[in-house]
Picture 1 (cartoon, rainbow, N blue to C red):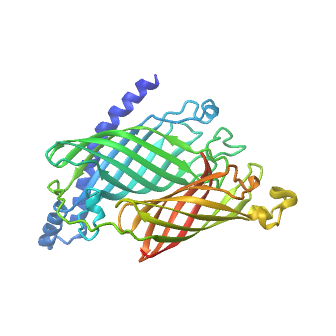
Picture 2 (tube, rainbow, N blue to C red; picture 1 turned 90 degrees about the vertical axis):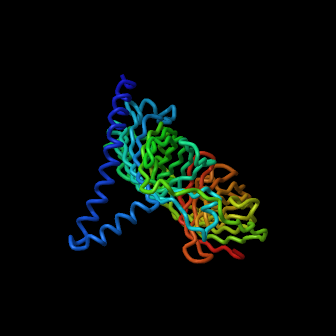
Picture 3 (cartoon, rainbow, N blue to C red; picture 1 turned 60 degrees about the vertical axis):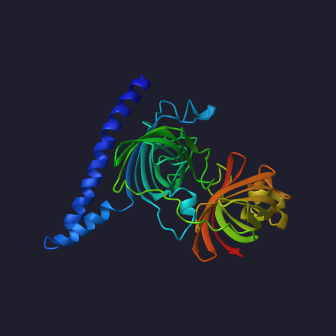
Amino acid sequence: MQNCHSRKVITIFVLLLIKLVLFVRKFIVYLLWAFIPLSSHAQLSTLRDSLRNSSLILELEIENGGILAQKDLKSTTYQGAYYNGINLKIGWKQRAKKDQYFQIYNYPIYGIGIYSSTFHSSIIGSPFAIYGFVQTPISPNPNSKWSYDYRIGLGLSGNFRPYNENENPLNLAIGSKNNVFIDLGLRAQYQIRPRWKAGVGLAFHHFSNGALALPNKGVNLVPLTLSVNYQFNPDIAIKQDSILQPYPKKLYYDLNYGIGFKQLRDDLDQRFFKTTLSAYASRHVSYKWRIGAGVDLFYSSSGNDEEIAGDLSGKLSSKLSGGPSFYLVHVLNQRLALNGNVGYYIHNQRFNGEIHRFFLRAGARYYVYKNVNAGVSIKAHMGKADFIEWTVGYTFNR
């Protein structure tokens, strides 16, 4: 019965996809007419020609199925649940020659997405999200109607129905209404008309609050995706016409500071302050990757709490932890990079939530001004989140 329901939903959504893209296209034209005086026909014509010649791409994508439910949640949180989602994306194909990374990544699409979903369950809610994404072509062939790409997205979500002891005790997956949204995708597309493409693929979504509120087992999805997109100017050609400058061989030195909060126990509503001080050295091994190592130092205010730390509360060793870590940077363009770590605690405290000797980190950084960057990352112990770090940093010798 669920499969029958799923097929009906897919059929309806496929029909809606094309109608919605056409509607959005007409809506943009309507806005041009509405906000430009009737006497300014020449200006309107210029704007419409500019739009036709732009790199703007509109896309609608539906998602179906693929809930990754932990065994102990199948009969509680996800009982009777079935997932459907929809995305509206507006993107721009990058053409600027001043950043050679656009050529290295086959002139990717950067954009903003709006996501809405339902689990057909009052336990989980109907989350939505707003996110930024980069969609990268894989070995593009201008002579083929087929194309392939992968996608990375990061944003914020809302409208979950979180765990509540009295009102919603069955949601044992997530304890907050608003969460971080991580989106990954892999897709094949077929050009059905010069401006139109239809696609099919797989996505991975992860919702988490980084232990800001418990429970935080997270919501994980691997849905099948169907998409249709409209490109205003399909004649934008990929031309590998620039001579790439060699990637630098010098060492980069990163100094970062991060802050966040963590709830440690279900029976305590208090959130404890955590900070990170990190220093790394790294160098390029290719255009896209930098590899290095460094050290991370962590402070946990929960080490001052007698209910958490007991007789050890207040001691410096109860509040500080850290150790060496492997450092990895995936460079997307001159300003944007993904960062990751695998570290090992020389000293840690389990009562602060540092439950394994190894710690992990994954995040994103954006250079807001010259060598100054800002970003967000999730620190974790194997599959369990520690906390969300909001970071600022500086890169020397960049």
